[in-house]
Length: 240
Image (cartoon, rainbow, N blue to C red):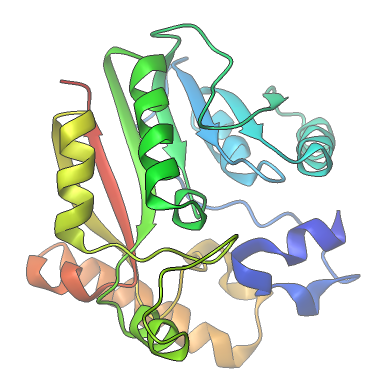
C-alpha cells in the first residue's frame, strides 16, 4: 500500500513510503451524491471513490491493474467504505447502457493517446443515464509546468504512458461532440496536480506551490481567462 500511494500524482509522495499514517483522501468537487451511482475511470488505489462514498455516492471504480484494484479493496475495507472495484479497460466498459448517474476520472485520460481517450469518452456516454453528469481532469498544453515538459520532449506527441497535452478548445470540442453540455474550469496550477487536502503530508517546499495553486484556482473562478493558463483542468457537464 505504501508503494501504491507513493505513485500518486507522479511519484510526489515517494518520500512518504514507510511514513504514511493516514490515507490522503481528496475533496471531490461535486454536489452531495444522495445515493447516485458513481463510476471512476482509472481508480488506482481508490481515493476518489472513498471521497465519493463519503459524499453520499455509491461508487464503482475500474482500473486495468489488478494490483491497484486489490489495494483499493483493502483501503475501502480498512476505512469502512462501501465501494465496488473491477479490473477493466475504460475503452470497453463492462456495464449496461445508462448504468451510472455520475462519471469521474482524474489523471487518467491524459495518459492515453487522443484516439483512445475519445474511445473512452464514447463508452462513458454509453454508460451514463440520460440526466447523468461527468467530471474529468485533463492537462492544459498552455500551463506553465505543462509547457516546461513539452519543451523537454521537443513538443513531440507522447508515447506509452506519457502525458498527452490538450488545448482548452480541443477539450471543449471533443467533449461537446460526445456529450453536448461542457464547462471547463481550473483544477490547479504548476503541477498535475496535488490536492490542497494533501498539503500537510508534503515537504514545506511543496506546500507553497500547493497554496499558490489553490489561490490561483479560486481567483480563476472570478477571472475566467486565468483558467486558460492552468496546468490542470476539469471538464464537466451533462448528457445532451
